[in-house]
Image (cartoon, rainbow, N blue to C red; front, side, top):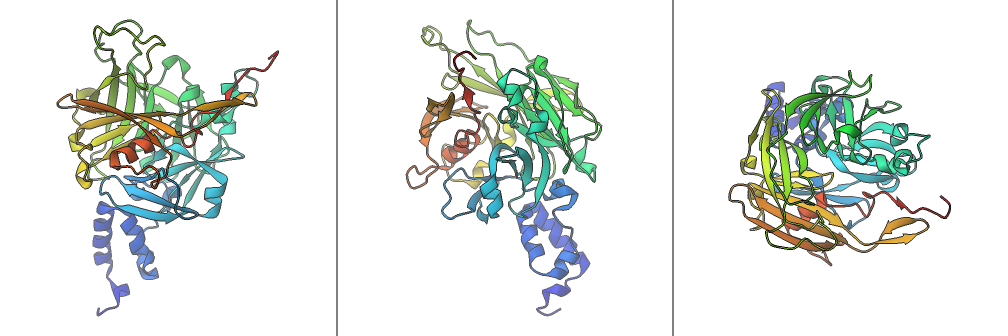
Length: 428
């Protein structure tokens, strides 16, 4: 064979491909880029509308920071600690806003003028086109939240209807602000949606091509006949967990679903349910302005949900750390980073706020992002909390890995995560 690597046999290429995909899909993409002979003998990672589970960039997240160069963004691998800089196409950066949730590493984009959604793979450049959020609004409603597409931005996105095995996958979104779940096929013209306001859904996640949502009582499985009919939720597991007695006025528990791939990114996926329990110290008078879930103390209980046996058991996160926010969830392997604050078996809840100013009948963001970080080690019960400012600039506000991850999951994306709050005009 000599030095002519293009003459590698098919068997050797298969072995190399399996090894690369077991490590990280970005190495597979680099391998295919070397020569045309290797590309001809390997599968295009953009198959199945760019949504084949084998080729999704799991464990990669785009850092919330000011770019050092135009169109360039840095990505962090939360499993290995590796950082890559990626140059975006100009139209991607110019015409779109990045939404909160990702689909196994794919960025969720919203076109600024038309509100079309798309999924962008930063390592292949492939764009999976989805319908506009405008197709989900109530055109005749008097409630601003129902007629504005900004209120329909997704808080969770994933594959549905066993899409892991379909040639034409189905994408599902959960829009918590309007209590809707919608489904669409890539390239479709509209979202098929249904309102689940009476269920008071808390969170949603995708697992092995199936989409799940949970309330405080039940875990549901989404069905939509491959995206051809309106979505329906089928009860799967009762998560009506024991009630912890709290004094009157304490906010209710908060539930977050998370799909976890483990160290072997393509195997052993499971659903994790995190229960945030707010409390107030005994003997302390309640705050005069009422309880604030951003800052009040809480502890977390973690459950492993087996959807096949319909069993919910306590879990210790299997040696990982878990960061959760309003619309982002990140699993981290602490051994890949050197930080005493990053501990395995710890849940980090990260929520943010910033000052807003009133003008032109609406409220607009003003000032730096304030991140409220609460950490709870599941095994020993130890907890900590802190508050820090983030202006997305490493030079002004250098951050460690914990602050970086907390800023990411707690980000309001420059205020875009909070739609304009309309102020009533005279006579309205």
